[in-house]
Image 1: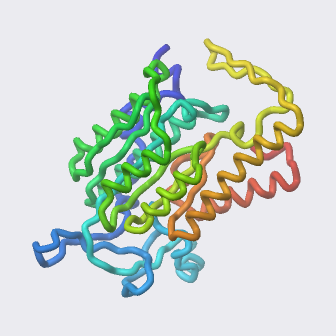
Image 2: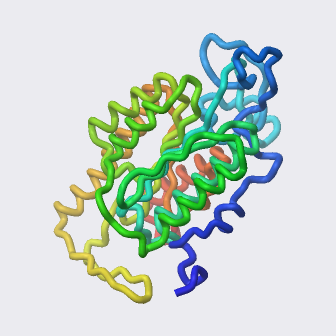
Length: 320
């Protein structure tokens, strides 16, 4: 099979270069050099208590939706964020889950493919904004570490690793848990880091929650849950999933098992949302049927979330 035949499964390096946002949308925050060499820092803008209000600007990735300036948003028709000013050096570190559970999808693409594109968007945005960009990649046989740097070469190295992990022939071995990956991220973290956690959070247990809460003490954390409709609800009659060459039988489940499966998924999602809210983290949800660029436009994502709720409430056959 060619890469074209595997569109939606394999994310090639050119694919991950093409998702680079337009110049007008780049940078997690406006920045400029500080007048002293002692700190070697950027003048960065964050939402936060006890900081001096600086300005409002167009929403950019990593901003907390709660900091949206609704008055300016209503007047202009575009989402604006309130900015508060402080000085710090700010690495951008992206933890991306590419383990076996991410190599699945029933709508448009695999979860791993979507995760790779979202991670690439975050990496390019940080790089084009002048931030140092690095990452951790959870693979099917371990954990790969990429030190934060400001070079295009470092970004391409991270993207190449993500591309490799979308290939189905990649060997499987001993996977690391989400908790262990978060612990590694926390230990290499420094105050002011922008940390993105991109995963389906399938093993978001008490240990992982503890690590995530500790990470949020010194880092600005954005959690992005990647899911597929089948993660939330398996088909009651079972069936077969196929990529055109291989097939997988899905056993039919009785009502109680289906309910438990759906309940466990919803419980993990609610737990992630609750922990994020209580500890000052941003939380986004994307499905394999979604356009990944929505992560750059939270007002569109919010509208789509409301649309899904309406579809579920009315059980409309016209909703995707």
